[in-house]
Length: 311
Ligand SMILES: [Mn+2]
Image 1: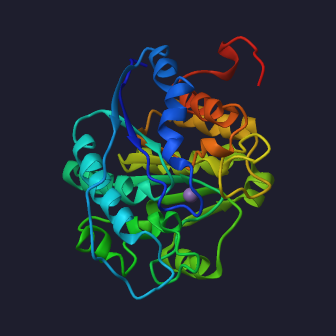
Image 2 (image 1 turned 90 degrees about the horizontal axis):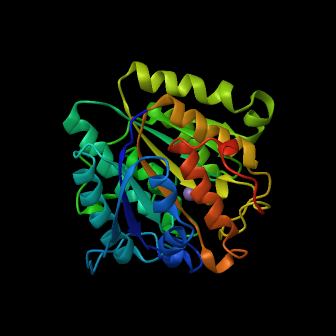
């Protein structure tokens, strides 16, 4: 496969998470060699630097538990505009988070770009959580738990962009993989919306290929665009400790790489989020390096192409 044109976009947002530190995520991914690793695979890579969020003031919603609404609305507007633009340029954007609230902007922006291109947007959500809360249903008030519900057009999100979304993601085009923590309100929303949810037990019973292949086949048959949103907590905390929302029983090193390798083989991925890396919680850069290695797998590296090294 010919080299791709990749744009790295830093989004040091941390106001959507319950603890601080994701602000350092983009730089940790840079330090771990994200650009160099992708270039070594023959891709053309440009790092666009870190975005600065729009300044937003005075928003309010009825739920008093919602945290940092103005700050997240600013990030959402900036990232939405960025994703809508890059989504029309024939490049593959890689959004370096930052907490998962960044996907409020990226997924909605790519849904808008996909509409302009006349193609459906599919979303693969690799996460311990389903992030399917609304601004009303969340108890924690942490907005990194809401981006998928926003993208799918659930009600009540108008304050974020100042208006409801014109182009939402069809919930039937969403596959959540690796999940192991869903709140009751989210479960009800997911069932009603018709999102495919493959939890860790399903992975245990069927394995990654039996779950991922049918989804990729659907994307291909629909001539769809595919946005992948990779949360650090998709991985088991034993191999990826640098995340504020650890849940035991995540994917293994090989399961995660297999997902990335299958995505590469499919040739379908058109945009990627790497989110929730909290370098403050990392163990000598271990998680940052793992995220870089997984991204390299998604862009064509075979795990056993490289020499063994300490991990
Ligand atoms: Mn998440």
